[in-house]
Amino acid sequence: MMETDVCIVGAGPVGLFAVFELGLLRLKAHVMDTLPVVGGQLAEIYPRKPIYDIPGYPSILAGDLVDRLMEQIAPFHPSFGLGQKVRGLEAVEGGRWLVSSENGDQVLAGAVVIAGGLGCFEPRKPDLVGLEALEGRGVTYMIRDPQAFRGRKVVLAGGGDSALDWTLQLVDVAEELTLVHRSSAFRGAPESAARVQALADSGRLRLLTSTSLLSLQANGDGWLEAVLVQTQGQETLSLVADDLIPLYGLTPQLGPIADWGLALDASAIQVNTETYQTSVPGIFAIGDINTYPGKLKLILSGFHEAALMAHGAYRYIHGGAKPSFKYTTVTGVKGL
Image 1: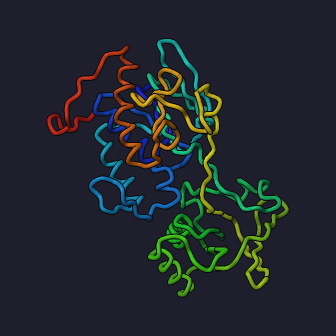
Image 2: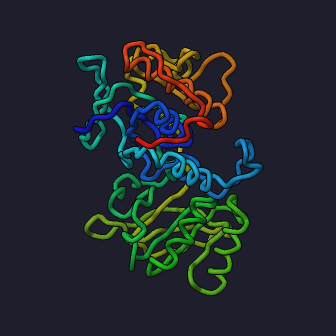
Image 3: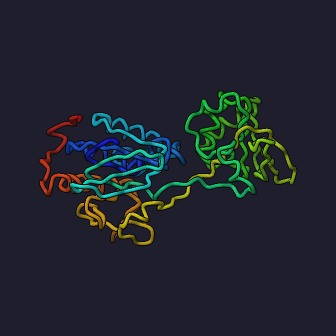
């Protein structure tokens, strides 16, 4: 078990900025997330899409914003528990909270901040008979370690930034790489689409557009052996495959948070906008997962909420005492 001042559930941009605001008040943070990387949707779904409403940046790529946030919070040395879904939340002695994950990790924290965006993200799965039987046996939805696919026959499916970016990363890793997209045009960054097309033209990968997944074939041991696809011309192809990675994006689910006894409104967490505390003292919620009159689901708004939350969390942890607050133009940024 590890101990920290504040446990942040959600490593998206708002959760990362919360580390900074808490750090300014000398509060150490541990950040947990279901996804295997920091950045939330920005990293997993559209890392190469530009964002236009971040102060000081007329335009910044989503992935670059995540990098800047990580650079900003580095002086405060946050710890991370990634690739694990938070399951349990239990009140313990002294007003503290015990947070537990599905793999058995436990974090004892003075306060908990839910910054889970729209909740726990689950992969959008293709509608294929027998898909679940092959999950973990050749079918996976997230790439945690690209080197795990070295020397293997890999089929990627999708047409967004995630599919394009992972195609570009795996082309030099996999023995054979195929990208299947049900449309003739990609939704991702044009530059990435052009690079993928150039690799296909040079024979370094197989690109099948206007093609849909049809069915899966397992070998005698119950592992994936082939992926059957169908073109719009109704031609059926069998692709020998060790791995199928459908990258159709993520769908938000409130998940275990729904059972934590918090006041909810249409699957969003109600908060007091003075501190962004929920109906349960010591538990705060910021970002898209909360709701209040006038709520705007913007990263910018989440940053504002993080600042006020940090002061509320400080007062909760320190028995109502207000923090000594000075502008960073005066104090600078002092690491923990």
